Image (cartoon, rainbow over all chains, first blue to last red; front, side):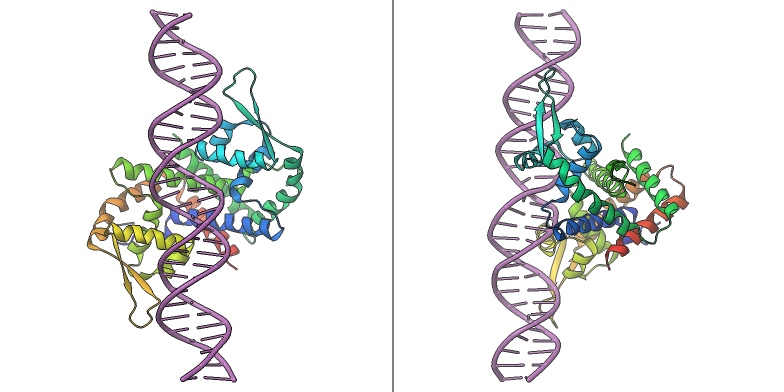
Length: 147
Length: 147
DNA sequence: CAGCGTTAGTTGCACGTACAACCAATTGTA
DNA sequence: TACAATTGGTTGTACGTGCAACTAACGCTG
C-alpha cells in the first residue's frame, strides 16, 4: 500500500474500531430496551466478575484495559448501587477485592442472555470457521502489542 | 454455550474491544514518541479526510460513528489549530464542508507512515489470508448491525 | 529500625462522549 | 404563500477517560 492509495476506511484499525463501536452500541440498546440501566462500562466490569468473582481491583484494571482511576470510579458507582462490594485484604491492606452482591449475581440472568444475543446478532450468517479465525487474529493482535 | 460456561474473556465482544483499544493506545504512543500532539480522536477525522477531502460534516459523523456533537467539537479544535477549515455550502446553507488546510495536508507525511507502521506491528506474524478473513468478518459484523 | 523504592488505590484535571434540547435553513404540502 | 416536518449543525449536561499527582501500605537494604 503506497502513500497515495492509502484508504483509511479499508484499514484494519478502522474496521476494528467500527465493529467494536457498533457492537457496543447494539448491546447498550438491548439493555435499555429491557429497561436495564446498564452502561457498557459497568457491564464490562460485571461480565469480568461473572467469570471470576472476587478479583483484586488491580486485576480488573488489566483485564479491562482502562485506567485504574476509571475503574475506581466505576466500582464506586456499582458499589453505591449495591451491585458489588469492596473488601480490603487482611494480609496486605493495599489490596481490595471486588465481590458481586446477591443483587449483582441475580442480574446475570437478565444481562447474560442479552449479551449472548448480541453476539449471535453480530455473527449471523458468518461461517463458524471464519469467526474462529477472526478471534485468533484479534488475540494475536493484542499479543503483538503487549510485548 | 450455556449459562454457566459463559466466559466473557473468550467472547467476541471482549476480543474486539481489547484489540481495538490496544491498537489505539499503540498508535497514540507512536505519535507522542515522534513529538506529535495528535490524539486518536483527531487522527480519525484527519485520516477520513485524507481519503476524501471536503466531506460534509454530517458525512464525517456517519463514517466515524460518533455523535454529531462530538464531531462538532473535534472539528472546532482542528480548525483552531489551522489543520482544517469549515466552508459553508452556498446552495444549502445548512451544510458545511470540512477541508484540510495546507498544514493539515502536510501532516499526512508524518502521520500516515506511523499509522501504517502500527498496522504492520499489529499484524506481524499473522498470515495474510487470515487478516483478510478477519477484515471480512469485521465488515460483516458491522453490516449485520446496520439493518 | 530508618529510609528509599514500589505497589494498590484515590483524586484532580482536561477533554472525549452520548443524549437531548435547541436553532437555522430547507423541503413538503395544503 | 403559510405552516408543519425534516435536516445539518451547535450547545448544555452528565458522565467516561487517560494522565499525573497524591496517599497509604508494603518490601528491601543499609
